Length: 311
Length: 307
Image (tube, rainbow over all chains, first blue to last red; front, side, top):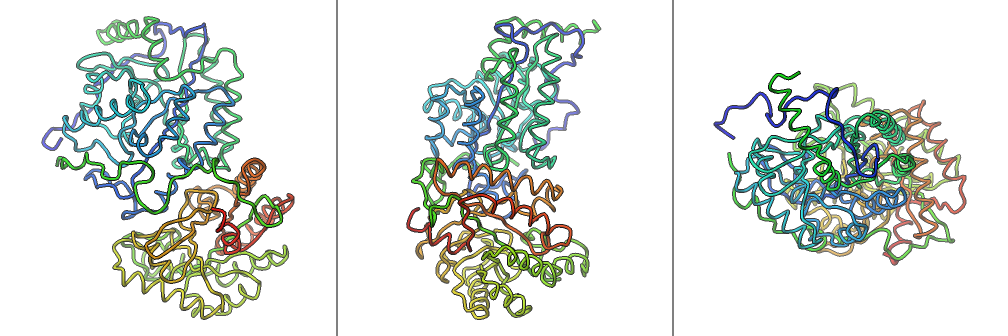
């Protein structure tokens, strides 16, 4: 960073308008892939500062905010997991991988259910801002090793810690073997990402379905969150008659797992699960199907044609 | 502006918490708590009684509800003070109607500023919880041990002297603590605190000065948070509080006693147009069998030997 001039565009994907895209077909003839991504996070009591972002609003220890997040790991995760069990959803865990060390009990409960783990960095209080490429490679290595050691899983997905990124982040994720990133919100379908080497997919995650955004930024009530989940689903489900789409519900157990919120959420995902055309998938499964069905290659080719003027 | 290599060191990356204050525990795997008389829910009503000094400092941070207009901020100084003149008495009247004994978290300076207020709280049969000295005196790690200890000692001296109660409970202004706060509270005879928002049940904390209990206090269904941070309406507050109660009540059938905490502010719920919404909440909760309403200290005493 520092002396490098800022760029006006990420340059990570070509524009490809919705109409006229190659058709996506999901396994078993399902219409809409729905995946739930609980952010199971650990925020540190006394984290070091990063010049670009201070972890807490108050000086360390920010007891109120720290303990609010800790609620998720003591109480909220159980309510969230019970709601997902009831609706038949496996989670794709956006994991601060240090949580494997802190709370192996939570990791075990997720693993026993066949949930996927993807990386959300080491801690949610450590950002990649101002890291060198080598430092950022080191946290990717740490994440692969930690998740493999505790779960036997090979990481497939990545959501940067607290959505912090550098311009080279996607290149080094792909180079390390990451298959999908959740950091971009530009589409309702998985899309190829232009990286230096390897193949990387941008997986539809969502800011607008994300409980932390809904409750804390948009100031939406718990019951209205249930309502907007249903509306998002209904619309995408109808549109998926034409071509398969993806709906993601990103969660934080310290928020959705509160007693005044859990029932409205649970009812909304029961509603989704009651539809035959829903594919209750994980991030890894969607990425695999995207490649296996030829959608990755078809989208890449369509985007290249569009960029070359075939419009 | 690159990061030092030790930015990738994680000295507290280990089993359990990254500090020694308390142990991790899964709330749904604990030994069930039994409340007196076989009740299911301990209803913990905590009304904040606060003084916001006109010259309250902005550094290192302001407690929520702090004055926010240019000095002299007549607007919020007086709006908050409304709670001390009218609002708190409106809430006291409603609690008396319902025959409830509850807790009032009171800034220490209220003892000298408004002794009549404190007298009404005590005569209503309520428990006084220490709420720091005033809303401008936030606790944080930039305070020396001696300075922070002096604030705590003075707060307790004032409140104990004015009420005749032992005052063994604490709620920090803005629920803010420094690294030393739990030790200093314990040293000054505090047995439980309401600052930590990580549980729906009491749990033991560790201090070098002895035992301290963490008592639950809801964060996101606090009347001030819903009204002034989320900007949600009173019916939306009522709905969330009812929904919160319903889930805790249901869980109490399988997992043992739960605490339903109801944080109120005299300058929020004590407004004329809001107080009947509070009545609606109380009517709803008290309409269920197995609800035990008690001051936090009694709930702490009932829980102490079980957690």
